[in-house]
Length: 364
Image (cartoon, rainbow, N blue to C red; front, side, top):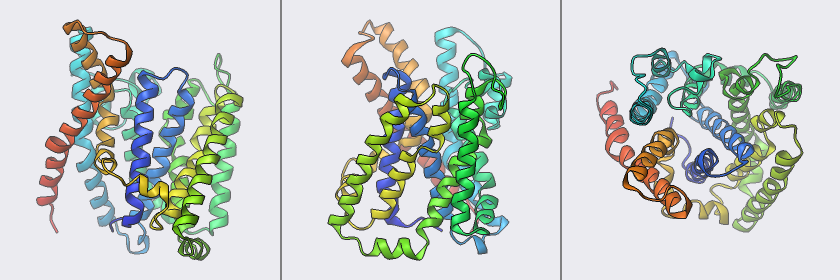
């Protein structure tokens, strides 16, 4: 049940680039909200695609297989989630003297249910990015039923279903005034269009439908005829399309419905679909995304994402105490270098050993 190897590295590199972009928008890039929403949506679509790829033999997929799948995901990500939460708690205590270890927010984070609360202090809470992991585990939990349900429809109907969901979300987002509740969705609009777990079913489902598209005879026949030159041309056209679409969404859309637009931005499907279509055919872009040190760096994407807030504020406190400059290029290099170094250390000395220990004790 392991994913096909030719898909893995180019898409993993693309996801790592999305994670780095999210970090930059959180701390360094002004007016980067659209890019942040776009990259977050990409990560959900990516997860849906790979979950469908992992469940590709869904006709033989039993409850025991799903329990094993969930256990595997928990072993990979939950220790990291707890460690990132602990780092955030430590930084909050040192920097602001808040003692939140024994709090409802901490419990909600540990139980992976914080995004189900509509209060910002819960779904952002102690580690403001952990809502993503909580949403992701909910999507993993319901993934067999999503995949099996979609397989009952022909591909055209699957695409139509996703299209109707997109239209509904666009209408909801466009009808939302930032200064008042929407007629279609209650306040807080940001939460219901961005962090709410059920809204992310749309992104996840799109990844599943994209995978089902790759199973069609036409897709496989077209992909088999690709040469390295044709693959490179398709990749370059996809890059051109993304460059064209991005300013359209950023500059022309309503300030709140970009959240709906980004949840299924054409850029996400174009980027993911092009890389999947050309993978294995030695396109220049795919080959470039497999060059060292990108494979090694892409393995620490989850650590970079979950540790970013604790690392940033922890490094800021340290820099201030040492009397070093807290702005400019040097500060940026210290922050990004510290985050990457911490992520690498946690990956190699904490999360990977724990996961291997779990696998070694797993019953066959």
